[in-house]
Image (cartoon, rainbow, N blue to C red):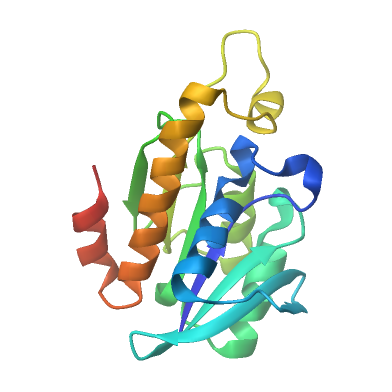
Length: 186
């Protein structure tokens, strides 16, 4: 079994914000893998299908970003999903808009959603796809920046990175994550 989690905040007022690119990748994965998020349990919205000979789950935690681990770990425990079969997709301030980076482990890097996951899992050893959103201009707070939307020029680059991330997720249903990482890192 594999679990792909897109981080974001629930609600219309957060749609298409920088902090919700993880949710947007899950939306694209739903189309590519033909999965409906028709289950509401574990403080999230999830669905599953079979791909690459395995059951593949997609999850959007509905806990708000800072409590993401409260949704992910109970679902993993219930379905007995191993931590090496977990993939988290989220926004990253340290990458420019339009870039993605795949990693197998690492710190939270100041991202509160990832901090929550590490806290609940008890480890930072899990697969991740980071979607670049860039840094705020001097004087702008990080919370205001990540809860804001992309300017039109950046939005085009971000759309391409969301599509690339969804392709990486789809590839992961068939291949080892290390191979996918080597194929998709820029």
